[in-house]
Image (cartoon, rainbow, N blue to C red; front, side, top):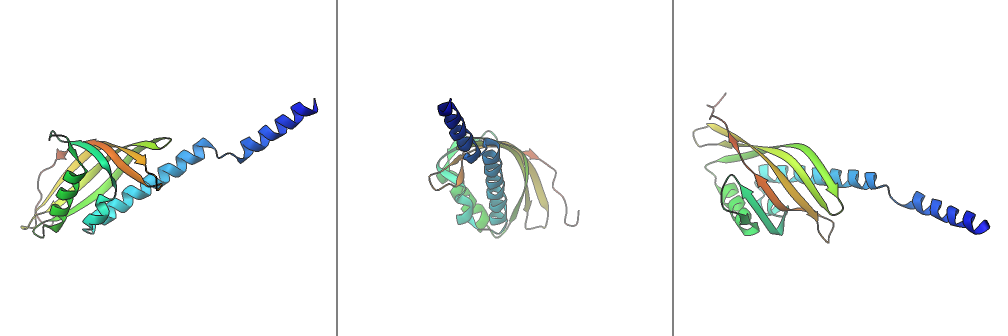
Length: 160
């Protein structure tokens, strides 16, 4: 009988000391949310080197019917776009859902991209999509896969 009580006591201590899965998922969601918000700030500040760090080296993605692409493709495009002084790019982020399972997470989201043209005209598009993130060996969440499309809107004139 005392062995059973001892085993029950040890089990109770182990369960009390183990982090709750829900708390771990909440921490991961917070970390992912913060990472995506920081990416938005870095992109809007034109920091191309920082924005590339969100993507895993094995990245594969599909965007609005273009052929599948990878890490080098996205980083080349980001560097070129953010260096283009004739246009101003700005993203806003709408996270709709984050699902975490261990070292993988799926984020359902929509980005809104506003491009200010040399004429002052602003063209916006909404880009709904789904990102798959993986926690790397350093504990950083990185996008390893994503799929997105855009819903273009009409251009607006300055002041509209």
